[in-house]
Image (cartoon, rainbow, N blue to C red; front, side):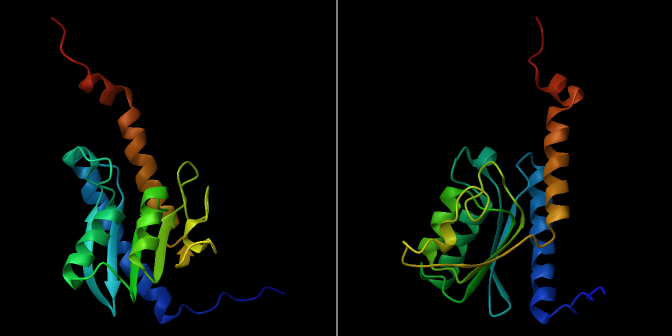
Length: 173
């Protein structure tokens, strides 16, 4: 006998809504040629900060969406401790961003797509719940993961297309 899916909770609805907003940010990043990752920091239902990847635009290897959002949230709060906050991000954070999340004392992270090549929450490493660290972060993975994954796949497929490659080659002569 099949067990029916549980009804969505208010938290599920809130997580989905915020992840949709993060996906909108990721689409904005793609429009300017950045890897489409978006991040939002929320506390008590209020959006404190939002960001998307800006590595190419800023020529900054640390300009990941989640790191940028954490910095902005700290500025808004006037404190580096982001206790009581939730970070929504469309892609599982890398080692650098997972470290920043732990150091910021974020309470909770919700992410979309897994990152099998660089994910530091569950895919390659488990930094956010490592008992050796002084802070652990509650996690919810896979929220709107198909949409997040598709956005990334389409972005990289377009980058690799023959037409895209021809446009990037220097003119002859």
